[in-house]
Image (cartoon, rainbow, N blue to C red):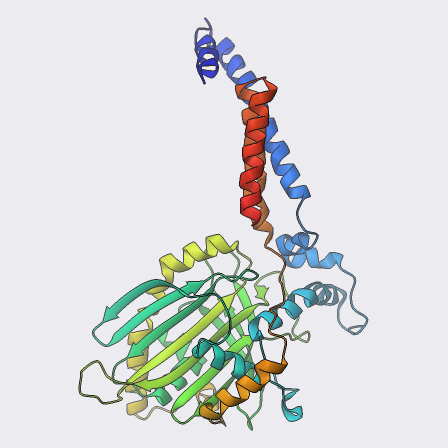
Length: 413
């Protein structure tokens, strides 16, 4: 360290400003060159699929189109081929462990396997990591808690419990399903567009397209969502998840989100008034998605903006209750929420144990995000800069490089 100080003092003793600037540039040049070399080395270690993730839809043009889509435009076929591996991993992550699907449900976007997965999440029997408590907030007529967990492969997952006083599960169910009211009331101000692509009036299964607004530094996001509701008494299991639809052309903007899972369990609970009446309604939400943003940055943004979004739900729900009480007609989306599949949740526990004993519960491994290589590149680049700038001795360089390798190895673990 004393050698560096002496070197800097020698620079500032230069008689001219130009001479001092030249010496400083000569001192900083190895630092910048070493940092750039470290970044290049880190980028060279990236997995091959990172080019698709970073390049987005533009990189997808480099992939050959699948033979199954000869009639599609060339650009769309290329894009569809690029996301097939990611979509396959996405659905395996979303469903994790599934029950056998009845033949009559194989063609549906959401089926009994998805119900089983949501039920296991609600009962905390999905075998995932433990939940970490994030926050707790209380309003006069609403209570909110949130948790997060980080699976070894995949984006962060979130769980929340919201309890609304003086609300019935049926109205809350319709409220969350009503896309028209979302936009009319603007309680969900991120939703810019919505349209129904498919619907099954027998099971209530729908496929919808959403376009959601993202911050100014990101392009808006497009979602193709399959959704369906099951009912066990007054408890509703509402599944929404991303589904593949090659028939819907992919665009550069808005960017499509393939991995998306957001499902609720809506059930009556005892009121906090202490009268023992089951006049409150709890909404258990399970959510995760890969928005195309580095996961650590997404975690920070979600943590900062979560409560600001959640507290808008309560006035939206109260406005919806007023509209229903006044007799306003419900939208087609809300009407589809009335078409539910009945089942007995008590019997599901026995069925779950039978299926779990005969199925493979291994979650499909998803490749690590490309951003995970950035800390390693910076660490190595900094080590090279330190070794080239501070000392010419081999011993010091060996210590610095050894420390950098140790930290980089810890980051990989």
